[in-house]
Length: 180
Image (cartoon, rainbow, N blue to C red):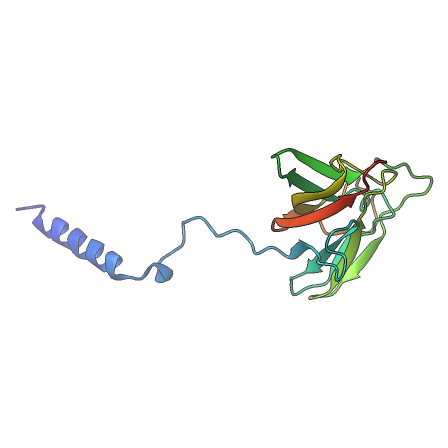
């Protein structure tokens, strides 16, 4: 009988806590991940549904300006890759051919909220590697990844957006000339 009042108070406290909505409680639970601040997508080019090059759209979907490293310098040069799967299930990655710089500096382009940057992925083997072989029409399921690490770090240099975002998958057709 001596423990009855303590048990009764504990029971009432448990009932009261159960009645409080989750939103009103202290949150020791995992915090949902941050909303992405960049969106990347593969553009549909009017009148060119079965061709390369492919246009990639990098969009600032945040409410603040963002600096993105320019493609001419080593910080922005290899930031795009295209992952593909063909009809037979073969996979591959299309990426820029490694570059070399006589002059290099981390310059950026500023995107205001809602603005977009357009870059191009071509089938030029001097610039891009990893396209599947074959002749005629080739159907691929693709997705684009935009990644920037901001490396190498240089004191006092321009700072650009860093992170990784991937587009939704898209089916495209490319044309390879048939060898005579």
